[in-house]
Length: 212
Image (cartoon, helix red, strand yellow):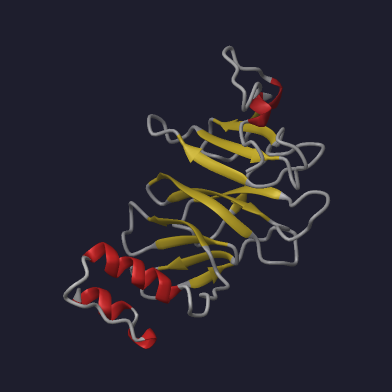
C-alpha cells in the first residue's frame, strides 16, 4: 500500500486501510488518467550487448543507431551513410558472433508515398562503423525490415521486408537470405508462395504481416 501511494504523490492519491489492493489499483488508474500524457521523442526498438565486449551496448531507435562503450552509462549516435538526409529508423539488430552485428533500418521513414528505403547493414567492430549489405532490393522498393541470425550458423541471416507504405494486407515484399554473415542477400520469392493449409486470415505468405 505504501508503494502504491508513493507512485502518484502529485495527484493526492492516498491508500486507506479499508480498501483492498485491487481497489487501490483501480483508484490509481483513475487518478493517473487525469494527469498529462507522457511525452517522448526517441523510441528504442531494439537493444543488444556485445558478446565480445559487455561494456558495448547498441540501441536501435527511431532517431538512428546509438552506441555506448561504458555499459550504457552514456550513448552517442553512430553515423550510417544511408544516402538520405534524415535520421533513419533502426528497427532491429542481431549479433553475428564476436564483435560483428547486422541491423535493419528505414533510411527515409517519414515519406508516405514511394519507398521508405529499407536497408541492411553489417559491422565487424562492435558497431563503430557499418557497411551496407547488397541484394536487399525490390523494383517496387523495400520498407521496414526485421533481421534474424540463425543460432545454429551465424553466417546465415534472414531479412523479412515489408512493402513500403502498403495499402493492403499483401504487404510482404520478400524474405531475403544471406549465407555470408549478412554481406550479400538473395531474395527467396516468399511473397508469391501459398500455404499448404490456408486460414481465414491469410492464404498466402505475401500477407503474413497482415497490415502490421
